[in-house]
Length: 265
Image 1 (cartoon, rainbow, N blue to C red):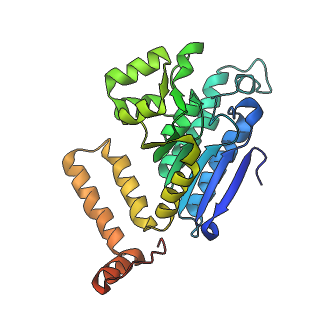
Image 2: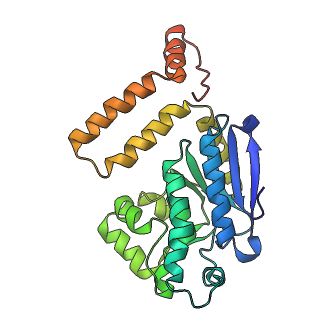
Image 3: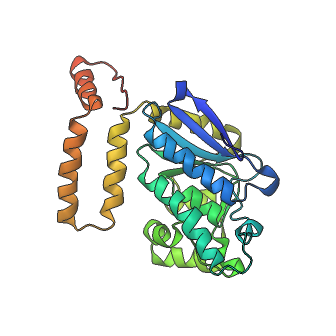
């Protein structure tokens, strides 16, 4: 099914992890890999058995960013707006798939995350990273601007000053510093990274997926809403959550003083 991703299935299919599997290029992004990632997220969002998705990298890097040779390799050498087409046809659909995914999408950063690779990690619902990893908005180093949602998310995650600083300089930001800035969720030492990450992924895979999906939707809409509009959205989505089987299970478990067994529905 996939030629450049390696998929791991855990918890009887509730948890699926996609590994970028091009270690010889430090998992640089190309058209095939971007399309496969989009399919992975798209399919996982619609699979009722899936409760959590994760993205990581094989080898020494999480992702070194766009493979420039691939970006310039459209079949017609006379074609105009090659980079714009690459963004529109391959990056933007992936960003939207992750943002609109009905399941949590978590990035496991196992090494350097550079350029579009850094943004791939950061557009996920949250990011876990090894202590030795770093993030770099290296677009500026080749005369480009942050894409892959970078100009949307970086100012919101960091504020104007830090977003400008990182985008203008391409600074390598160590994982611990990224966490301190609120750019990523958590950092673990390299030796115990997988164990700690799996504990979190397994926890999320067993939580009420419907509520997580609706929370994600509400957070995403908040960036464009007034307080009054957002309060209205909360009421609508809260009712939808209250009509879920997981809500009834949560209430029943609370009243019966037992651990809930959520089904993600």
